Figure (cartoon, rainbow, N blue to C red):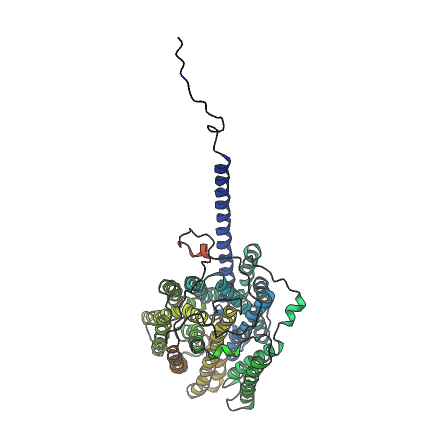
Length: 583
């Protein structure tokens, strides 16, 4: 008998390779991982592109600070050398809210690219300028482009990232700004000492080319499906014209007063009167007639918004007066070269960099921004008081220690003020009106308005102080050369007059800091009225489509494909506040 062992038959399909479902799942997972890597690369490059663009504009804001004495001497026009900075800041400031609105109408990407192109054109013309007047006009053109850069970068970042995460990103962005502020005076001083100050403007061209290339390749934002004619109809032409003229007249009056014309002259009083008339007219036009107001008047009824804007204004007054007139102290009083006057600012600027980054991450971690605003404003008030102690023989260790204190206060202010504005006015549903673009542009506008005012006040005080003091200590033939060229103090003035002249410079600079103390204190007082808003919106969806990702890299959380809203009124809907504020 044959012993037959029966073995169960197995269907070929059962012992074959993984079934179609498994293969499909593995393929899908592989494709998902590939798509994830591509998204992460795109997000990282997008953020890098925005940082390069911001670095471009921020670098130009401070690179001329160490060049001004040499530029004034080369053109024999030191008394109006401050206009090289003021003209840039004037147009930079005036066009901030305009570019914010234009980005709503024409799209974020191409508005930003247009700003970069205008900026590069202005920089090229600055480099080939043949007179001080030409240089000032070309700096104004560059300022228009820089307004588009700053407004575009901050608006895009604000719309890419949910509000509770924005502190970290604002910190990183402001760190780039601070680094540019570090290298700006240093690069400008190096070019001035070893090549020519004209390279301070030529350097923008290669950096701008890199920024343009990265933005074209990686910044992918949806375009609006409306005709160009319809977009033009949305521009608030009357409001735009009024606010531009008002800002320019106001800043011209500040720069004329005490420097070119007496403060009581018609050349100063008439522009100021027209400024206030135009501001009143602007309020009427925007509240009653404008279809899409460039600056909704209802926005200013929010106590926190108004307080933050006032604080931001006085922060700008303090910051830029220091950035532009500390190098004058270093070069004239201390005898530093242009390059070394930039190096002296590095400790302060590095503290600004790390302070801003740390403040941003602290806001993200705690959800609180008011303590940073309060601390920053208080530290700045203390700092400018300490700067007033600088004398001819002040030791550099003391100078570094005091400027580092100021850098800490500035670092606290950069990130916290923008977050405060966005938290106060951004609607829960941003589709109804683009509060982010409005307040971001307005925040930059007020800070740069303060910058222009600060530089104008400082320049007027310095020139007036020298004009008053120098005739009492110098023979008549030396007074005008010293006022026209600060470098003449050490290069052309006889040795027996140098000590008294340096003391006259110190006393004139000290008057700047004395005036800055109460102005900075006003910003500190205003900051006390800032309200707290919850940064995490109720029911807000997570922006990052990759739900299982850890929050290890801030760049991974950026959402690139964000559609800017264009529908509905541009007025801030106060009936639907972001969250209940704390008093």
